[in-house]
Image: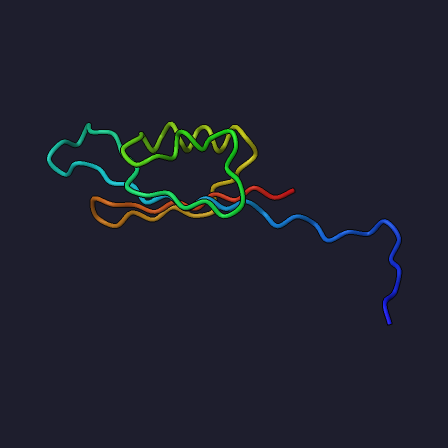
Length: 88
């Protein structure tokens, strides 16, 4: 038997973006670049800035300017991982 719940709906799950970045260890001034980015849900309008070889800083600023919150960032030698979440 099903209960009618009126206009109640299940909320949309959050959007999650995980970025793995790297920095040239021989050049301390080198920008961090994206090795790989995984999107769960949507990353609009930042999808184009998440491509391999793009600057991490540009992608992070786009995500933060479009409702994402950075929930963690870890440095792993010349690599790093950052996780961004956008809730509705």
